[in-house]
Length: 621
Image (cartoon, rainbow, N blue to C red; front, side):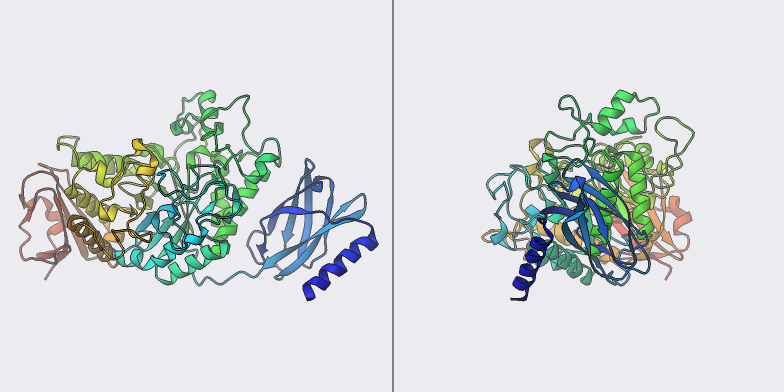
């Protein structure tokens, strides 16, 4: 009743003053907060004819510091939100030829007290990665939603299968009980593309969760529920590109909003040219400005308005959802100077926040260049060093070394020697403990396929849970899910058993799960829950010894505690004489194997089964 009366009075007001209200299609960010450290806010307003209009407002503590029309349908508005501004709504009027042509009510919200959140993730954490469309379908009613171009088709490995936020929320206890303390979910934002949209990397609205996953409010509720259970949430973001069906692609805010070419030009995907001191301009331009795919227009972060848009978008999600971290897709594909600016802006607002960049490179120096305080020279060979401010990176070189090490004969530089040699190059990283380590993810061959045997999978799990950095595991690895990337990404992103009504196998209850898979599940659960409470393996100094005869030994030491790890990559049982390791063992006389809880009363020699790992908590008594 009251809403109807307000609308009636509004339209009477319009008629008396002789103008018609404009229809505003988008205002982004949709709202903001009072009390942010950075007082500056840029609004993107999209409406027919808005580009020729003049904005004005009157609200204590908020100043209109500038505006710029772009074409006929876009207006950028610069606001300064002073320290005295209080939460509330204020009206922005839009005038044309001196007459108000329309208005918009904008909201400044009160910042929520997240009680120590935004504190990031660290080496005490273990991350679980899942693809939301393929994990669990908690609400079948949202499988097909009005206005969405692609419908659900579970029979199509590259189609939408119906997994959603409700399914994830329902099974947070599974993730927590398995021993994980952080959750990375592949992109959840709207991907309203005609096909192949399930993966989430062709965003069509940067401020909206895809309705087939749920709503923005559902996402916030999931984050709070997860954090309440002791599991941090990392949001997957994409700044390099958007989806070709993004709403702005029909009429770009500015001509250089995306990189334009005379004809379609794909990126050469050679990220190494960014750091290559001898790279040609031609190759670097194609790498950075070429499109990732025909359906993924390449965003031009050198455009200052787009740069502000992206920076504000990430800050908006951190503040709105109370995030613990961000995973940034295709990190080296975006403009390097912009990425450094973005990192500085996020860390200015949230100094303890963590962002892990997907730096998909096979050589450690190439990855190290992107980490904060790397001290390496800029890729163009100039003396000026590049400071990325990036807090964390994925350790792809270690992934590839681990995959090879466990599936080949040990030699001088093969087998476990690969891991030893690679870790010996950790000097290229400002802090090696900042590396996120893994054996597989949503883009590469699954661990169980690549490593060939269950024994190798268990060895990889043990290594990831005990070496430097912090581990990430891809959903389904705990039950030996298989898949080869060259058979199509749908193969490595299969549905999680038990996530759909009618599934005969159910991992959540371990129903109809083969014994071998249950053993691996329990093995990882033991590792992760032990690691969760062990400060030594989380933060201890790493000391390793040159592998001999297929055996690699390393220690994690912190204060007076120590953990010894023995990896036997050979096909023979070994009895290891330990005199070689005196510098790490001299203070200890016994130990306990954390996997089988067996006591080791004498450390002078230790037996290790073929193709296995022993993890021993050392003791002086």
